[in-house]
Image (cartoon, rainbow, N blue to C red; front, side):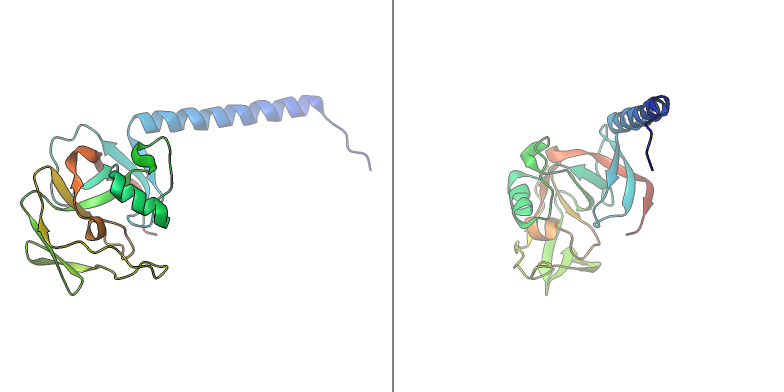
Length: 184
């Protein structure tokens, strides 16, 4: 059996493929420029989130999208918690977390339970080891300083403030709102 090459059909399929690819790329660029991001990590619901870079203030319960500090990024990259991205500050992708503590709030740990202003954060503990049985960093109790935030997620394996402490507010890219998300 001999296969024949249909030049006209090839051109048509090529044109359609290039057109669809171009539309997808242009649409992706527009969505990115207008603040839409896709969360693919298991720390928070998967899906599409909208980033508001013009936020006026940050409150408890807000989702924040931020660049990790060099110390946070170096540890997370070394352990494989984050993907390397040379286009981002400190070579790590931005993180999406929930604000649990604001300046002046106290955070503490008792038997690995997390407390904010002496109120336990329900269903959330600090782990001794990660999923590969490596010891996790232990931070001491403290008070959140001016221009700092204490961020967590409810995922038990999340790498968040229970292990690295507070983050600078200046590292917050924007607040985030879920647009189309689903539980993982």
